[in-house]
Length: 266
Ligand code: DGL
Image 1 (cartoon, rainbow, N blue to C red):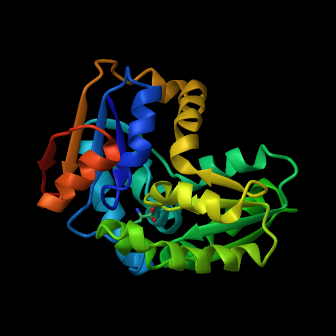
Image 2: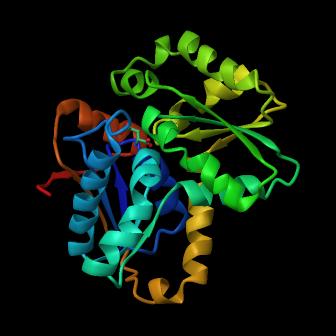
Image 3: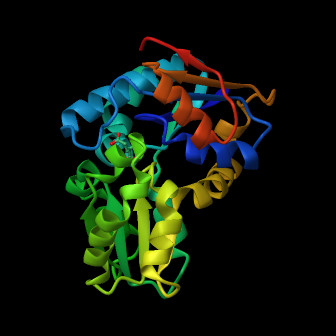
């Protein structure tokens, strides 16, 4: 069986690249729902429906587990998927969201008590980051900042104009005297250099592309029932629900090497 990686679009290729580098032996199927991206400003019910369809597709492709790289889908949909959907339709399959592994990594830094989260409006409204942090460590205060303009700018080749907008979002978090900022969206690793420059050396920036592979490794190590079912042929498939020239370019830029996208219907 395979490992599925799901994102609303192609930003998830940034974490996929690191996962494959760290765990090259497994078989991977990436699905980017490019037809319906962005998820970040949609309603909770819509994101849940989209996630459900995408997971169903990946499980049919023989994925034993799916990593949901998309923060919005993880925040808004995974709890309900685990409670309502998996037990009924795919009781032997697993889903791993991106929020909990991120939080587990952050709380390893014992001194951190004030954390900022930069994310899409959907992720912020779900309040899932503060809720999960409370479960991990009640003493940690979480401050969220929605950044609705960042994904559209990145998607449309506007990174060179991002600085003033980014500055405004980041400064709002810094006013809360945060000690660390989580880049809570698949696309933000692209901006991590700019963000690190803006916040300076004293604030830690957690970028999911730098932490997810290690967390997945740990997850597989602890979950015999998943690991033992995985094939090790090193195959990779990259699927999208819509194909354009710009999607092809993003895929190559963000994955860092040429990949062949396959157009699929969910
Ligand atoms: N993948 C989304 C996330 O990580 C960003 C793009 C979108 O809004 O769909 O939140």
